[in-house]
Length: 279
Image (cartoon, rainbow, N blue to C red; front, top):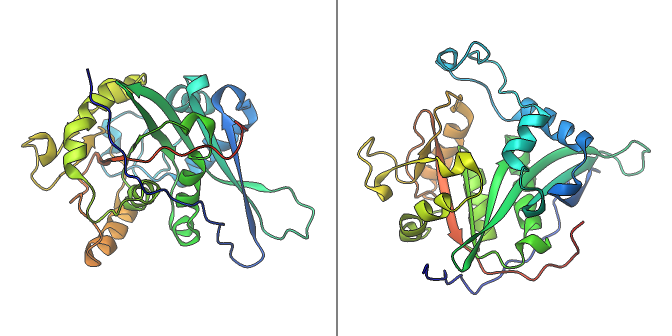
């Protein structure tokens, strides 16, 4: 039997979002079974515009992956990857209205998909997709999106959270949601539980994840501590620049971001009683 994870006792209060100028942000949580085709299309378009570009050797993947071009996403692929298990998935969307006094409809600004599953006597909440860019970091939208997940009923009993992503700011935001500090996270926790958590996932590509780094006794490259091998040549210029800033401030402990790899972040978290219904 898998021993239940003991989460931290400290909770985290969901703050009000910081809004530049007159802009206002609003957040909506939608269970996977109620995400409309139009919303999926909008999220796919947002991903395609903001996720990143293909790296120099992208052409080795397929004829459709061209160096310097945006990484594209279709709504069908988005659903299969992030919301295929409808009743155990949730989408948090952030909408922006530049001037609340104007009559235009709020525009989709950012989003995150998450899925929950059982891991022994524990409940895992996994961030499947999170679009991050520099403007978002400044407005703390990334942190607010992840904190909003904790308000959904699906996350009521979650005591482990995790994600696989190349951007240090996303890892930092997840650490904040777990009342942790990205500069001194519990690496022993990742070492002990990550493999089993991913193996228990209902998501096929997570099950097949190749763990890399010193935490997993991997000798592939000693510069990595907790990473996964993604096989994709996505350009890391922007996340590497952000990573350098974290390292200069002494606020990083997951070491280097290797080519064709992403960081693996897994944290214990105190379960939070939801403050609202599913939607």
